[in-house]
Image 1 (cartoon, rainbow, N blue to C red):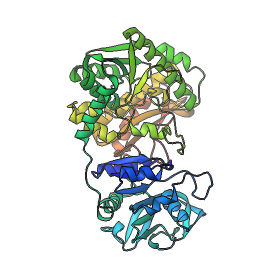
Image 2: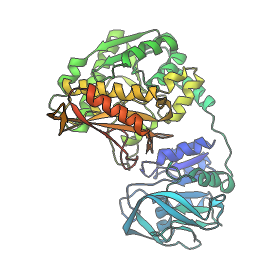
Image 3: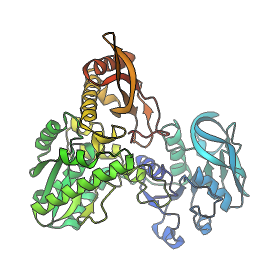
Amino acid sequence: MVGVVNFGGQYAHLIARRVRELGVKSELLQPDIAISKVKKIKCDALIFSGSPASAYDKKSPKVDPKIYDLNIPILGICYGQQLMAMQLKGIVKSQEEKQFGKEYLEVERSPLFAGLADKEIVWFSHGDQVKKLPAGFEVIGSTKNARIAAMQNLKKKFFGIQFHPEVSHTPKGNIVLNNFLFKIAGAKKDWDLEKAKQQIVDSIKKQVGREKVVMAISGGVDSLVAATLFREAIGKNLYLVFIETGFLRKYDISDLKIVAEKVKFKKIKIVESQNQFLKVLEGVTDPEEKRQKIAKLYFEILETEAKRIGSAKFLGQGTIYPDRIESAQPTKHADKIKSHHNVTLPRDLKLKIIEPLSELYKDEVRKLGMILKIPSNFLNRHPFPGPGLAIRILGEVNRERLNIIKEADEIFISELKLAELYNKVGQSLAALIPVKTVGVMGDMRTYSYIIALRSINTEDFMTADWSKIPNNVLEKVSSRIVNEVRGVNRVVYDITQKPPATIEYE
């Protein structure tokens, strides 16, 4: 087992996921973990994550320095490297020239870099640097702006790297992690999704017993897989609720009915609530306020349905790791990026929450769905956020804007499917930008909204690159939207990576 010490970086969980992907069980550890507990869990190795903090800040998260005396191999990543250097009497300082994005790393000979070329592309995200090595360390990697971009103490099996090997923007990152896990730490492959599935089902049975579980289902991958796990664990005591918020796409209801039949869900109720949700968002423009108001009403409706079912004590959720990461849950050192719908829970919620997928990533959820024999065409649906189209309309939500975004989304997705591109990209969406621009149609001046198209390629939804959709497809989508969707006269295509952008606009 490998312990990943989570200092609050957005990629701490992604490191744990990469370790599992390589076949090794991983567990997230808090920085203030007691040395006695580290000994008890018998880690083959430790990995220190990144952090939004600075190692030299008195309030920044730190490990007990005695951790370096446990004879356990340690890999420090970004902040993890800096903290290791500082605690072992090196020097860390703020750098005037920051490094954010791709850089070339000049690689020195090291078991950590076995199989790498002399120069490799890696991905940085930092403002601090190690300026002086601790005793016993040597430099094994440099860039034009960082002399100590990587360091090692071979005797102690301590390694520090300023770049992020866990993100897809570092092409050979998995080789670095593989080298650390197997060539340096001697870890054993012991992570199996089949076993994880049975452990989840057994855990649900133990928690729920003979009680009833109510769960909101959207037809999306996460809630579908979670609901299927509940069905396997508790059978007839699962009650599914589909809340029609009015923020769904044109095809969501019909898809839901098809998947419910295929997966053999028995008790499912559709609750029509469009007017309630539109009313609660009147005049709301702030994204966080929007998410929180939607979530509050959503869970009020769920609790009402739970009372109608009678004596339901548990609320099932399809929360996955990325939702919790961006919502800074449960890591106290993380920066909150946005409140996720299924993480922003009302304080007075009486139902007990069960989240069977909360330790898994999107690709793992899909693999789990295959083990559960869910048809692949449902598992391969693009993710859709809990607040729905309400967060794909920047600013205030009203009926006019909802109608516009529904039509634009339908055109974009249908054309991607027609061009056989839908299953080749990770997620695609249309967003309404609440800015009007001047255009001309039929020799007449128009003053209408902008639609932004976004499509990304990703393995884990923690990092993403924009999809290189052929120009002729984009041209057709743009032409159809401008001609068929009243109130739009301009279409743009978003070519921003994640990070720095998130996938959704709000």
